[in-house]
Length: 426
Image 1 (cartoon, one colour):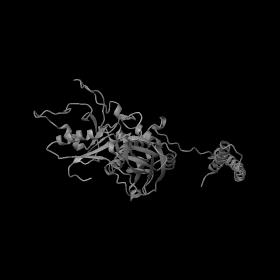
Image 2 (image 1 turned 60 degrees about the horizontal axis):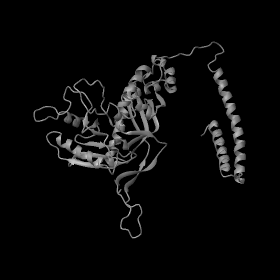
Image 3 (image 1 turned 180 degrees about the horizontal axis):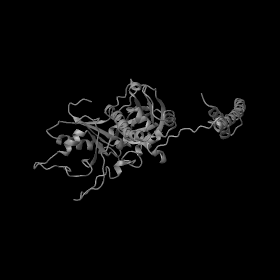
Image 4 (image 1 turned 135 degrees about the horizontal axis):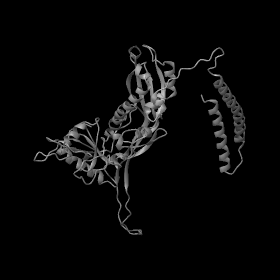
């Protein structure tokens, strides 16, 4: 049920809307509008007085709260070292939330065995903020040293620290207000040609037209969630809990999001992943004794994308096993074709950045314009904790669950190519 303040704001918004409509149409209020304005105005005046009374009562209660007529009692204060700094991380935001602070105040020495724990959901940030706190904090990682391939490799030590690229570094990110339908571009036929300035009746030459092959797709918010277990003592230790959460959030949520982006079935409420999307191109190859057949197949797949109008390949996503096979490629003299065991630098596939995914089966590579895949934030990142899970209350354990509500879309599936061994399943 809306609060008094929300009811008052709704009345004001409706009055404003009626006034603007009449002004825009250059007319007076209709008979029905006059009746509605009169009722809304009276209701707004009444609600305004109630809001003022409620504010005054709340201020009075706050002024007298905690007073004791007999003897003042000092409230226990719990202060941790990280409270002196800003809550710059999600773990710190959680332990500095009102929900966690109330829990600490009620159990300053921690909870006993079997004590029920239920910390309400705490919103700790948005998708944009979460990505900014990652080790590769940039909105366009492929445009900086992390994924940019230097055209010349000099015989010197490369002092650029390059972490492994993941799928979350490749895709686009944004926001959404809710579910929506969109047209996936599965194919494009360009028929541009030079024609006469004026085409007269009877001329056999006509102006060519381009065509798009599309399919209607739903983008619905999905809750990407994962949890991890902590002890009651760790839950009571704010600095340690914040540190643990900051480390665990990246691993747990990355794993779930990556799985849905690649393998989402599109059924039973799951979003549709790349491997189940119609329009994604496919190239097969016959595996050999080393990765050479895959290397050549990837080069053919690159052409599948670059021959499309404006098509480009931003990265090739492969499994750790395939990444190892690439690094171990040798020439006829037994020399490594790549960086070798003592080299350092960006891993590439035909000049395109190589990214890793444990969610891909060995032998399967996905490449193309990864910016066509987007993750759209809906409600941001939230954290909740409880021990009503299995027998956790009796084992002094707490289940901490992290959730990200977002929608994933694939704008142009034909800009992606799946390279896999012939005979491999979908």
